[in-house]
Amino acid sequence: MRPGGRIASGIPAESGSRKCEFIIARCRDEEFAASKPIPSLLLMQPGCEAKTQAALRIFSGVLVGVWRDLQCRLREINNGAASQGPAPMNFDPTTFRLNSPLGKRILAVTRGGDYAHPGEEDAIRLTLGESAGTTGRRWLDAGCGRGGTADFIMRAGWADVSGFDIDGASVDEASKRFTDVRFYTCAVENAAERIPGEFDLIYSFNAFYAFPDQPGALSNLAALAERGGRLVIFDYMDRGGFYDCALARNPEAAHWRPIDAERMGEWLRASGWRLEAIENLDREYERWYLWLTERFESRRAELLAIAPAEAVDYARSFFSEVLAAIRSGVLGGGIVRASRI
Ligand SMILES: C[S@@+](CC[C@H](N)C(=O)[O-])C[C@H]1O[C@@H](n2cnc3c(N)ncnc32)[C@H](O)[C@@H]1O
Image 1 (cartoon, rainbow, N blue to C red):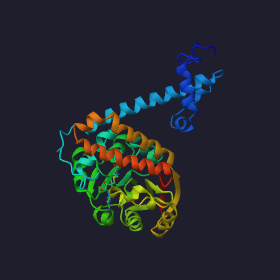
Image 2: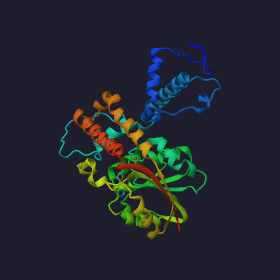
Image 3: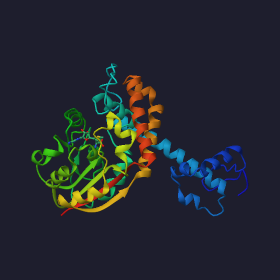
Image 4: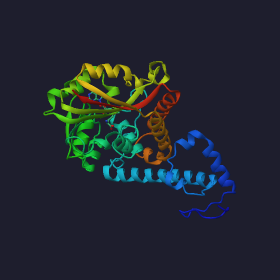
């Protein structure tokens, strides 16, 4: 194609310009390029020059970024995450924790919805989209937090969802906001006694790592699953050496137990589950946490309207540490899939 010509989508192809040279340089940075989705059909256009392909790659990345921000904005409006009035501005760094009401509010505004897991709605689609329509409709959300995931699934029409969490304040908030979902305040340790019936699918988004007795939790969840029912756990994975890294010494992460894939297999077998697959999401986790840390900057004005600057900086600094642990290779993410024997 001639410089200055147009490709099929009508994007000007100024292939000799300095801007285009900059784009090509960015695309040669493998890590950057890998983080951008590539519309492969467009890139396969016959006669499409390398420089134009690079420009398309960047263009599509920018579009996806804009689209994600729009989705977040819509979620905020729907969920009312950003509109709960000003928060108390007193902040004590020695007692503040991200799982406090203020910490959860900061995360809801940063993420644009009532989610406390990386990847928000993209992660839900990736993890559970294939189960919609292939299981019965009774699903249980273990460690549901503020209920955003259960509400997303109900609105998508995938299943009728019940959820439970040990944190009564989060469950109260979820029950008020998402009235179609049945929520229970209870720990996984006594969920089988508190929640009636059996479930076709039990899922958990970034809650299993916080369960103090993980083999016991698998047994308790097995008691709530029907025969052949599925278990889907989306969570942090220990890639080896997690407990020696700086993050593990942060008081915020003192209770973290990222999944150890080998022990998980044994625990599942011992508690009545058959391990089907463990999927690796390390690259996705890195991308999602990079996005989250950037959002603390791009959403700073909104965050300062609901929280003191020290609390926002505390949250950003903690998630930068999580990102560093992922990049160092000791922490990752994954999906564990199992079925009830
Ligand atoms: C990071 S949050 C994830 C919340 C939710 N799954 C989401 O993605 O938004 C972890 C949740 O696990 C809950 N949790 C921790 N230990 C628990 C336990 N023993 N039983 C039930 N829930 C627990 C916490 O209260 C918290 O809401």
